[in-house]
Length: 305
Ligand SMILES: [Mn+2]
Image (cartoon, rainbow, N blue to C red; front, side, top):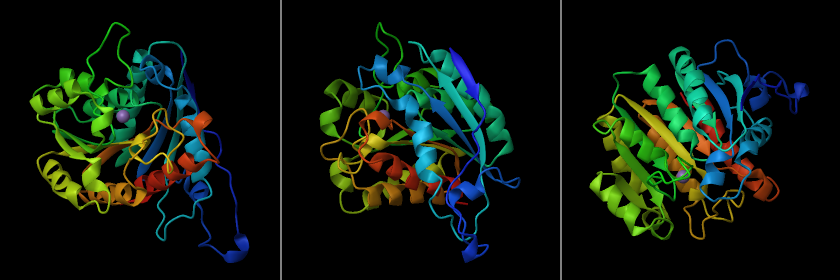
């Protein structure tokens, strides 16, 4: 069953004694001139089917809660909160379709949309929404993730491990996919071989430990040859110490400063129309550490021009 929930009012700390510039992110929600829209995809079905740890449905609320009190940047322009899609049941499919239906008009009206997942099955809804909004556009996909998520669809049906396989099936000619931060140990040779066959650009986590430099050429090339970029960030790319609250914590991972530098480089292309942050699993989080990490990334995606 799919339920649409209007956004709850944003609340948080206010410091009026410090004047008009004492703004936090909760003050920016709902501004009329907002260039960016936010929507939550509260879904556990994809992770459950992928034999993962459930809890991703609580992700959107946890990210909002950690985002609310972060300081706003110096030239805040605000964002529109479009609420949450809440999905119950075994099959993520209807929820993914509903996400696409909600996203397409948001993308027509706003310069950028940010989706808070959900597991990585969120991507199948995200991409379809962008495709509807930009029917003829060349769309490049930049996935910052430990995993390829191109598994073939098995008897259980699509899951959080299959979204980029589904996207390629829908658009084999236009499929242009880059994965930054891949962990060799987290992807079978069957998947790595499939990725080679499909021409997926991959930079492994080993190459992204100290700086983000190894990822910049891939980002610049995919940005240059596409009209729009869909940026998808799986929190399980981070080390388990930074992001314990995911379904599949990473023993190695790549550090937050590298993820932030990669995100900044993708945003600098000026072509990011859609982004999502997926796989936050609040029941497995420790002192909101992962939600706080996700909020730092969300803040950047909501406030970058
Ligand atoms: Mn993933």
